[in-house]
Length: 116
Image 1 (cartoon, rainbow, N blue to C red):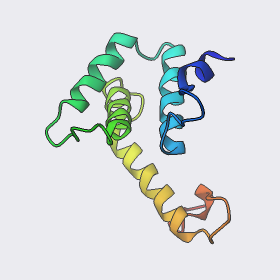
Image 2 (cartoon, helix red, strand yellow):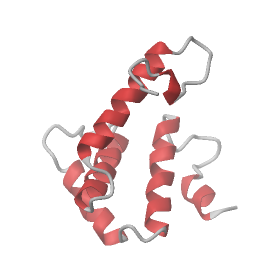
Image 3 (cartoon, one colour):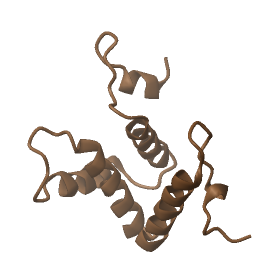
């Protein structure tokens, strides 16, 4: 079992992540840390800032939304992914999703606003 598989294994057959994007955000964070882009203490500080923001759900159902926001903020603060670039990419994926027929893979190339 890999380190990632061990980290996400839940008790019994219960899924650890409610949605696939949550697992992807978790894996991205681990991979970026492993590449030396930030330390775990930097990560803990960024995540702590996000989960302590007003409006956070007391039951924690929005935890991975905070996780993703922390990752975006940390990468922006290090100059690795500027917030406008991240926002533009998210908007492109959203447009591509809306332009993709049901049942087909969503590809960034499906973004009707893409040039080229």
